[in-house]
Amino acid sequence: MTYKIKSRIWIEAGDKMFLGEGRIKLLKSINKTHSISKSAKELGMSYKKAWNLIDSVNKSNDKPIVIKSVGGSSGGGTKLTPYGIKMIEMFDTINYNCWKYLDKQVKKLSEID
Image 1 (cartoon, one colour):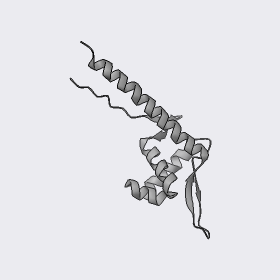
Image 2 (cartoon, helix red, strand yellow):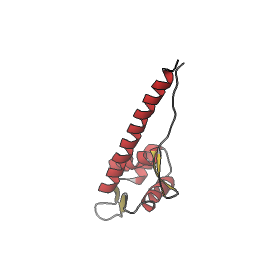
Image 3 (cartoon, rainbow, N blue to C red):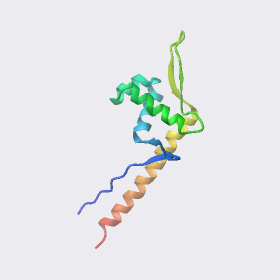
Image 4 (cartoon, helix red, strand yellow):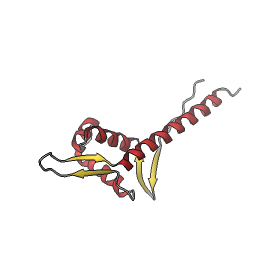
């Protein structure tokens, strides 16, 4: 018999969702495109949903994760703070280590006589 473990990792701040796979994908896209609207389009979500997710991430933390600048001669944009980039890296590390552990556990499950 072949077994699989299904799991999703997310981090809560207090009793509210802070980071999860979907929010991480959005943050990574914003880091690449510097645009909430381009990232929303890339991920197949509305601008409003993307904006609400980013607003929620920022409000769930003491330090800003994403900062947005308005228009001007060079145009506006959105970017991750250095702290935001570190949070993505930390989430990815936690997620990787969790899957590594779960893979070991499912292997043990398959070895039971």
